[in-house]
Length: 593
Image 1 (cartoon, rainbow, N blue to C red):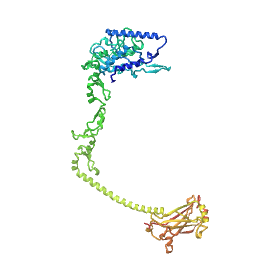
Image 2: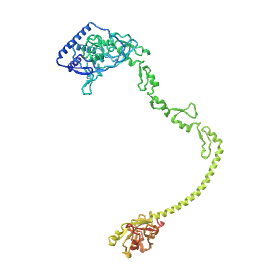
Image 3: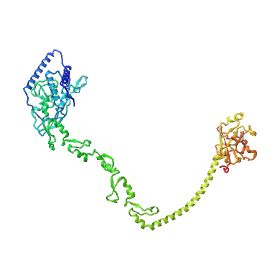
Image 4: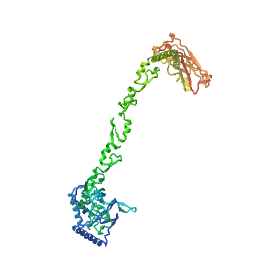
């Protein structure tokens, strides 16, 4: 609600209005006032209007009132039009001062207006409380007309922006207790005066009707006398008289007996028990205010309600769905074991499986062949009467198990024999996979030349073992020969290396070692490998070769004339400049841990 304003504030605003540019806006469009030779005519027109205003003041002093006709009006379209206020005569300022005094002395009302009509018939009218009239003397920026641009770029004033008093309220429907008098109706809209403005001739118009009439030609619609086109002031005293008209509630046909002043109608309507309202929960229901609590308690589908069995809260319209899923809802036993018994849904399955006396279950001797099925309460009787049958089933089962045990013993012995064979084969496979080495020697031509030149006389293979915990061995080869085979043969040797499990092995080393130079002919059946085998002699003289290594490795032993160089080049022992030498140790693993 705006604060009360003093007369000095109104005077200051009026002086600001008088200083505005001299232009008029007719029909929503701005028209410049010429300042040429027509200035004398303009002065004459101003003098004539001042004279008319003085005549109007005289008529008001004489108490002149012309009868006004009242009629029903089923709605009005309020349009906002632009207004450029012209200079006001001193008498207008005086009326504004009186309006300010009235505003300060009378409390503001908050009621909406109504249209007045005959008793018992609802009409709509305007709110004329003093709090809404305060804006009439205020030159607020919000009341300035909106300017729009036309297609050709020229500015025009929006026709829909008619200036209205601050606090303007929509009309509300009321019903008069007594017939409407003619002096309370507007001669333009034939409706109750809304923000009444008294013109020069003494007649009163609604504030909006005054704006619309003055927009075209400021003439009284009753006697066609001209009046001032300036900004009007509201007749507060007459407005207060309208506010005191007696009205009855619009819902009197439903039983409401309220009757009071026009200014109190809107306040009553907002709290009348017989007024139609919509549900605050947005469920779409419409009902009288007195039924609000009943609607919320019993009918509103959008109201949040608590579950009577659990802590969940949900909409009333979802109550059925929730009850179908709620784990705390008490339900009767589906077997009807006790008509008075109710069990929570979450405990119902456990009751049926464990406690319900009417649940049908199988005999506990089902595993041995009993197929009897009865309710839990009748099974004890079955156990008493079926003892002989249960003993016979147990005997048959024991005999069948004995037969199976005998057949299982036979199968178990077969499996033990098979397992032993597999273990022996696994040991053979392990020996095969671990007691031999296939050595790949690449760049044979280059390495042979280096051996002949003496820069690389001997090549050494990676170390290998005869088993996982067996002897650790390594082979060596002289491509240009060694000893008796130097320059004509390839010599191969093997040496025993020091290993991690030597303390567990049998010494001296006395297993046969066989060397193979593998033929790489494509036809596997036509291959002829060069083979050389040596069986160590475990004598005292061979201790440096076959004894447990004291250093990193023992002295090598083997064959100086393993293969002739000319035989190697005659067949496919060399392919892609690569040869393969296989070293196999005939170790059965009996001396190994």
